[in-house]
Length: 208
Image 1 (tube, one colour):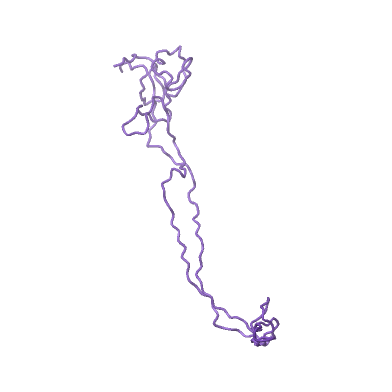
Image 2 (image 1 turned 90 degrees about the vertical axis):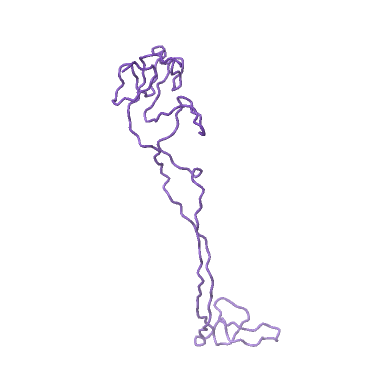
């Protein structure tokens, strides 16, 4: 093949760098020993610029042209790296969405029997364990409360009152459980790994 330009990056189908070429693996080189290549690369890919400079590191990387494409958000400088193989989505990156939840209560009723006593009432005020009783006229005059409760009825006086029911419609809140495992996902495009090499020996590229 014709002599390559020094600094030219080429793909190789084999896994070693030929004589006069370096692998694009980010290695640091001595400026004094490779001054011609340094004059072209500078510190675009790393190095301190006094003693060392770095080769491009294309291991696991996809190259692209530097600059800004019309309509693009980014103006890429030469040697800039970006991107990741995997990513875990955050809440801020999720599309705006909502989860509907409906709780429809069903009307229902409960019927039950109330126990009362046929004994005469002995108290106008209710107490724990008292029963509704046969009402007696107010003691002490018509302006006194009627005695409608009996707290100690006889055992044979207890009767069950029917026709007592309670109806209502229950209400409540709905909690939606969190879903998903929060695992990172791959961002990799379909890929074939080859061997990028950069020429250290060849023709110094003239500027057009």
